[in-house]
Image 1 (cartoon, rainbow, N blue to C red):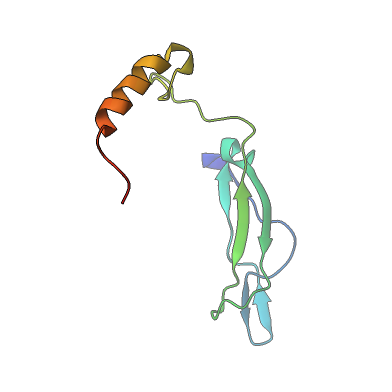
Image 2: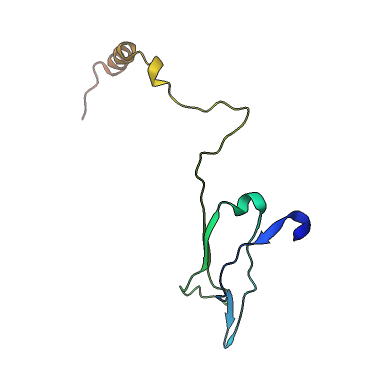
Length: 100
């Protein structure tokens, strides 16, 4: 996995596979260096999976919002909102309509 700069994210020695008295860690989660920064809380769950493989859980966390380069973020610019015009348009749109 060194040729693609991937690392195993498994933490601890909890078995990911159990069959009878046999157990091993055969299910491995890999991540590249960039993704590895965001992967946290990797663990094998104790909940019965009804399979020979145990459930694995982890979180992906980021301290900042993702940036999409070259694209403008969508949203409202409330500083440019003309509330009087908005009210007028809404009043006209709903004029004569009552709740039933």
